[in-house]
Image 1 (tube, one colour):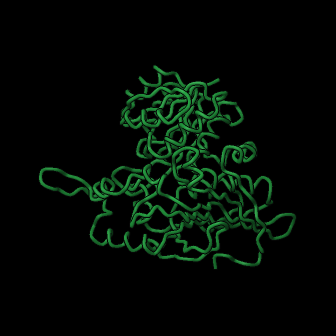
Image 2 (cartoon, rainbow, N blue to C red; image 1 turned 90 degrees about the horizontal axis):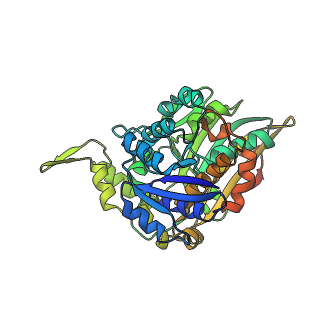
Image 3 (cartoon, one colour; image 1 turned 180 degrees about the vertical axis):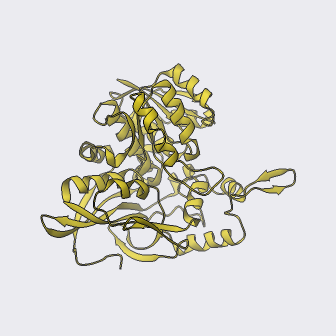
Length: 399
């Protein structure tokens, strides 16, 4: 019987709250807090059991500390903006509350995300005998755990990893993003980046394109991006020679994005409009559909997973580990589309393992540093079943 404080009432926050509410034996009391408490109350009204709500500015450490001390949670799940990772980690450290998030720190004034500032908390969390679990969404999160599971159970050595994120859903809008538009567009318009033989290599944005046949959604165009989980996986998967990340985009999406980029709408540099200063990307976020509103409109499926290539018992082996998630089924269960669902469910599962003492330790951990087996044993019944498909080790499906 434990208390959970959830920070963030967007699409993922809604999923996390719904899934925590489904497990009262683990999460006996729930508080959902956000800068906009009305969003929290709207989510609370969807539930079959009562929860508490609160207003908090997650950029304000003192306000966070006051809320934590008032509610006294046993774990905090951070699903607000990645700009707020550091303030929430600091508040958890000061109050002795275990911390879990789904995305690494992103600099508000620079299109860059990295773990350096969060890893810098390592000694302080360790000295305080407190635990911070980083990146427990889907990618990062499930993809990291798939890698750790493969390393522990399927391979003696993993040489190559490709992470593949495919969304075959259709929301009917000409252009919209499935999660926070600022984060999404900054991520996509950045240079591509992958790790090979001990060094990072860069490509122009969206320059590397392949086709891949995804189970459940068919053949899709996939593009090489830089994605945060590679930063920790290249350090924690032993013997790794190369890791890449690929995501699907339709021609329509790419066309809209290029037009917006060409006219300056994806810039984060503030411009003056009348007496106000605003970044074009911030304005674009305000006029695009709220990702939390896409649930009732979205049909189709996602397929997200990894291809691992390495050695087992002296022989080459290649496997595809993945989950297929249905947008309409997610909405029927928790009133959200599958992108938010696939991020929120792993966060709740990770928090459960922390509360039960299955995932434990003093310090800051990326999820692949923790035992993958209990997570993989539980995540299917939580709503994200997975499968392992053997591939021809001599065939490159991304050639």
